[in-house]
Length: 87
Image (cartoon, rainbow, N blue to C red; front, side, top):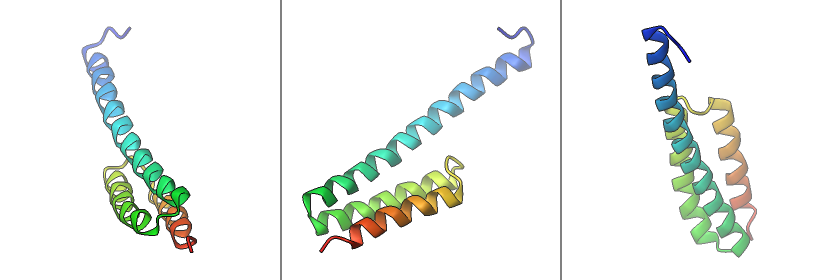
């Protein structure tokens, strides 16, 4: 355990930021799972609707620095490609 006041503060701040990042990451994963579930069900309308919300969540996470822009771009590309592949 840290003895210095600034080190103790750093630990608290890092825990707070980690919790925030975890919550945002979880929200993104949930939205991606909704898209994948709609794809598995073959429901193109629901897949497109959930795709839009998933892209929004991914963009928000990128803006907040949780994901790198290339990672976000890759995630968006993959789910978009999967939705477009539905006949």
